[in-house]
Image (cartoon, rainbow, N blue to C red):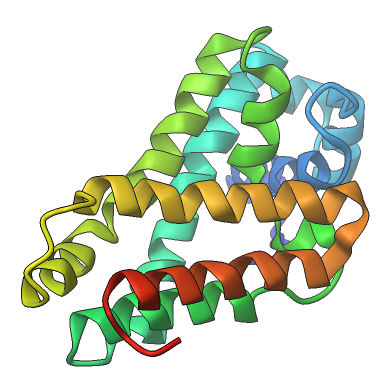
Length: 206
């Protein structure tokens, strides 16, 4: 994932730096445990600058989810898993790419919007809605390749949309299992099982 920039907030970068700080600090600590003061310190901005750009911490949470969706969309759009000519190979390459992202500390490779959605779905519905839009929006980017792979094999079930959502269900579950003590191995194990499931579903040798 992209790292925080070091531009001076006086050059118009205050909002960006706050969002980048939120991306990292909230993944590491959670939304409730992250204070506005802590975000300001991490971003190198004043509290006045924070409230100039965000009317509340909840507004920051919504913006952070949207920022995550936008920046990760750019990263995935440029990723190499789009290169194979065969649609199933592209789907499997996507899963392999997600597996390869599991490096470093847990917060570095887990999902901001998944983390926030689990925590705030009842207390901050606006944040939860923004998180859901990011997760479902990313799942939708897989549907075309999944649909082509299913059609090539004459499969009518599951639907491409359903299988795309399932990939995200497994990935989010992998993040939870990692946080619950399994670490990187739990994340990799979950993706390995998902790869085998997709192969078996498509009639390919696992």
